[in-house]
Length: 272
Image (cartoon, rainbow, N blue to C red; front, side, top):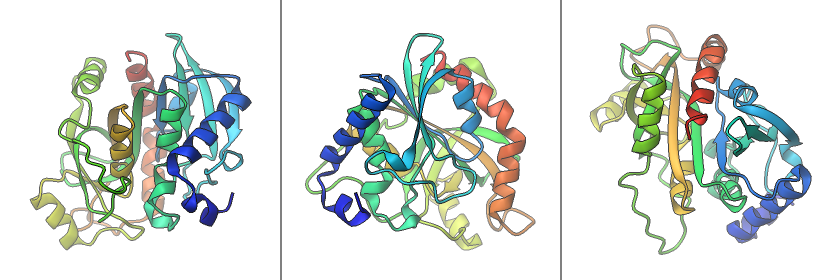
């Protein structure tokens, strides 16, 4: 299906078709938890359990090969030690790719159609708190959507008061009591924020800035899933960092922290 055809299709019918394809190819009728693994987080898929099936994302209806270095292009079905089924989405579509907001949240809606009741969102991001060095994981307590769009269409009103699960954040702090938490602001990208934009985000309550997650979280809540978000600070944001920003810096920080944060996430998943 071309992107043009996909955008004309009912998004929930498209998600159902993708979920049916995943069920057929993996042999798993229903999954329990979905993970979207951003920069630095991909190693968690190997630690949460046994992978029983791996699909190429671009073979699943509505999905695309990743457009960003550092993201894997697979969808995996994993059997956790606790007997749950995890659907690991390694192919995230970012809003700045120009495929439309329906494509951005297609993975989340597919996970819901596949039976997932819990949605775990991860990302690499810029930090506004100078105490959070690159490599610091931070729980997302809330978000600010600065993309000027929404994945919801028409008169669809959804309460986002407690969007990011306090229950799962408490479980995460049982694993690591030192975990900080903060508010994540999603910009549209793909350019990095200016120092003035970073200061604006800070003044309106943001602690973290990035180019993903918020739109997915909204779609997850609308689909009835319990949402958990965790960020990896890969760099200090523009105007706070003493050096120019680059994607290479993001990848390096993610690689350096990968083993530690993957183990952390796997332990959190094990408590769900």
